[in-house]
Length: 383
Image (cartoon, rainbow, N blue to C red; front, side, top):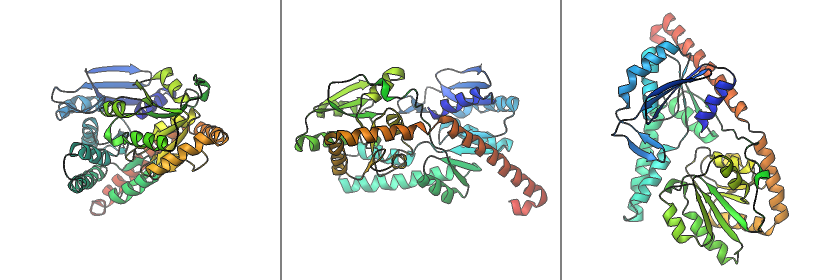
């Protein structure tokens, strides 16, 4: 989604951009100032998530990408994480001695650890924790090593900026996410039945910690709350578990466009229990829709919330429960926070985000030129 928004920004401002990505077919086409290059993944590709895969043979496209780069003559190459396409981009940036910038989009180490814990539930908890913890550390080490290749790295929250800056010894800068506050709006609310809706939008996967919804429902029922339901938007292999165990829930499946905007607006609070998200843009989309986000104290989403004003940061299941009840029992507080959440979201435009990205491109070019100048003047120092 962020990459599509960046492409739209380039088109809007008539900035030349070559976008190389993977897909089901090989195809090249122009969209204004943007040239799109889609490259087909091989039959040995394996799925990582919905609409996300990895092709160990993707390097076969290297010469095709090289030719496209030689024709396009970019000033800077931008890779978006540890994936099959970006590996080709990083290699060609090195081969052509072009300035390279990398942006961090996913906490792959935490995602992998969550998946491992889910897969190894049949083992003793101590052993599962030990194995997943070891894997998480090793994957994080490898990912940080990968990000040593770019001159500049962009990260979506302060914790990651510090981690990458320290681990890579590269310049680490902030790259947040914007939100379309015209498209996501409380004006699109259609329900008026008085039911308090706890919402979620995203992949129904282990790393999103969605099974917590079952525990939260039980806690609310224990406290005598009944006039509520979960509104869950998304698909994933945890859906079956949630449908089997949640008593009051509506599952919409995957939604987009106006249906998605309406679903957001029909929520009262947004429950985001994920502990692995680097940013959590769905919390911003909820806020723009006039929905109060309640997020965990782990990962990037906590940086999107002003505690008690635009949302809540919860540190435990009981904390989630108490914050939900506080808003259920306090309609005036709920209404005030809905307004503040909306006001906050309106200040976070995509244009402002991408202006800072283009400033980072210029900084990457400057650092590469500085390195080349040092190499010319003093090869030993540059090495």
